[in-house]
Image (cartoon, rainbow, N blue to C red; front, side, top):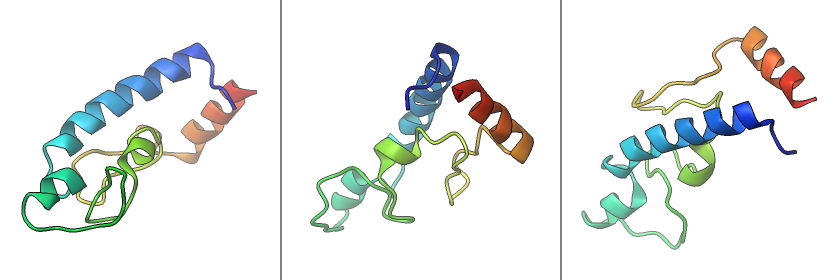
Length: 87
């Protein structure tokens, strides 16, 4: 499913803002590896929640469990509006 242009812009800006935060976080897998964390996972992920950062940071209804960033879509009404925009 390909979102309309205005949602692509929102998703991209949300991703950029969140990833900037994640890149400086001690729980980012690349940063954690500098402190002895080991993993066989090849992806950049959060060592706290286990999520793949490339996906989670683009999810408009997702939040960081450490409260470093919050959901853009916070209510069912907002989510329904986005779903309607995708039709």
